[in-house]
Length: 360
Image 1 (spheres, rainbow, N blue to C red):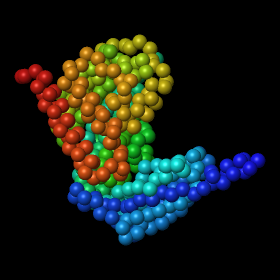
Image 2 (cartoon, rainbow, N blue to C red):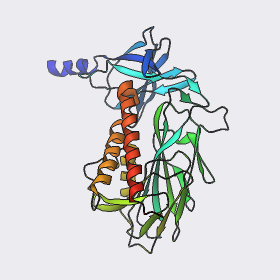
Image 3 (cartoon, rainbow, N blue to C red):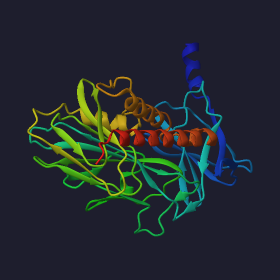
Image 4 (cartoon, rainbow, N blue to C red):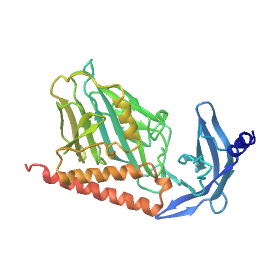
């Protein structure tokens, strides 16, 4: 009886989450005082703020709370009119978070945001001969200020949706679906874009017997197309067939490259495909891609790939899997090193693919 009575007291012992609010200035970071922070609870049956505080002159803050493994705890910090969120706060009493870093930034309506990478994952034809597509777009703000719209009708970033698709909708990713608008052949983002990368997920169908065409803007790099149908053919955009990949027993043919400004990537299919695929395949791909790990998992086995291309694409994928969406928990120097390494690898990949391209 004594042991049973003592257990709830241990479970209810408060734990601490503390850290600093900083702002990037060049390659350095400076403490930001006077920032209001809120500790939020997100659970199946209960949501809402638990506590709030204001960062001190040194940017420091501290929260005490009762641990609850049935909910997720997040920190938000409001700075210059923009709300910034932390990664989930650890709720394990034995491993309290005492070195949290919440990164905020000034804002600008002219900060440059570009498309950093794009992944098209195309399923084999279903019974009605349509093909489901997962389209993951990675946009990047390489500066030190948050991009905002100059007014409510102008997006903070805009991209293209492939021509020839139907039923386009926004999937789960780094930005709220409410902040993404699909209009005609465009995808428009109406949300602030903090320094670093954000992922936008789209889902749509290729109608029976149709092909798709995707025009690329000036800032496109690192494009991957995965198609489950052996009859798929990818042309344009300087993409090269580099390997096939296996995901839970299903093979996807893969093309990779760095399209040039104005290039149009076309995906066509040479004939009817045999049957559909299990309903769990696309959700699995969404989960893997949204975590930045689609091309870095150990279960993916490269086949028939020249070693140089395979090495480059795998190294890019490993970098993205390790750092995507984790800028707040990475030191500024390490983050800059990551960006430089990624750009160098992408340049090497572009040069290698250009060398493989037949001369005119």
